[in-house]
Image (cartoon, rainbow, N blue to C red; front, side, top):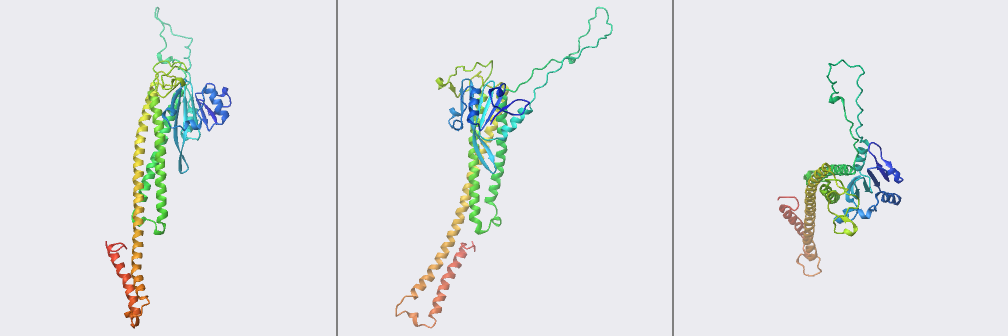
Length: 392
């Protein structure tokens, strides 16, 4: 899907170059090869593919080619109860912003609605003409001019720049990520309660294994979410730093302005350049600085959440180890109390002629009582030790 977003108008599909004429924001959503080729023709440079946007090097995620800034970052999205990341690309020039994404994001839809609802202030009408009849004035006295409030100068029409759209997108994405992190905090609190809840609230013994398996899956999902969130925040932080340091103090140079880069022959740079065509104005740079501070605070929150996930994982494994130790105690008791009766039965089951109790009238009952005593006495001893829930 290839969409053109114009201020004050709903999004419109781009089918040819004429549909994109004068449009500030072009949006590629899971584009087809034909739409990719059309966007390349409009941009004048190759549009990054999915594999290009998935590159993890900093020089691949932030670069400048022929006066256009190419930016990319993984972006987190909640799909049902699962969280997934998909790369998002931005191409920023002085006249246009091109976004490339492969999933629908609520942040983009929100900014698209803001652009559609955006309307430039109407030009003020000229002041009304004075009435034809006037009062007689003394000789030599000039007629007073209309009061300043009566004359309103026409205001210039305000257009929506590509930098402003990009800044609005990043701010909306940051707000969305903050909402997701709030839900992550609630998720970890619920998980912590489920792990450390009191004994009377624990599930029956037959369901302990399923309960522990569910806890481990939830802890693993939380850790994966924190990892994906960290990748998203890191990518956005790099973009905000780059845009916040890209200055526009005067007139922007023409496209293709020579840049000092480590790959000069390719016309690529990863450093902000003063007066570059893609650079932001002072107010937008200030907003980017604020967004960068928000991202730093979210990164700290994610680090804290990741530490809590690690703690909950250790606690879950510790409780599982305690359960396993309890099972091993039971198996030890069972094996121990079975050894003595087996030994007694083995002794009196030997086929020797001169066994003293062989001809004894109470020999059978004596051996049974001895076996019972060898079972009961160890059970009482283990019970007093607390292995069977007795005296601690």
